[in-house]
Length: 155
Image 1: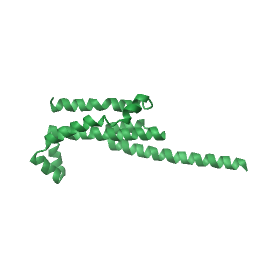
Image 2: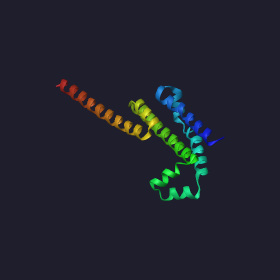
Image 3: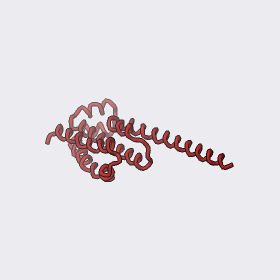
Image 4: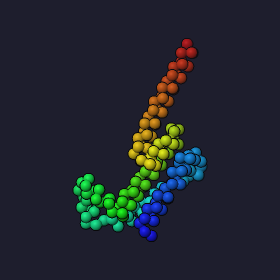
């Protein structure tokens, strides 16, 4: 298989997991699938393959003392770019899975954060952190108001 075909397969491989988390978050099969770490095994294996095939004396030098210009040249190589992209796929899916489980456990709405994470992982993560914080703040305020209202009615 060519690096280009493996790259395409990796991109397609992650889509069902994202679709399940975004479109069917409460479905039992989604929960069962997302409980497992198995989806990360083939992606990590592919990353190792790309990474191992990208190490040359020049690439090792670029990685040992990273300078922006060296990294830019480094990612100009197809195998290295495929390794970098696979790295993004693995970690974005891992973060997306974490967001998904956080939402399942806390009831925090996650669809927007998952969509953002799919396309720009760190932005999705930040979105979820902010959404969870705002949700907790308003939940705490609601509970305080509710407790205050019941206490004042009893006097």
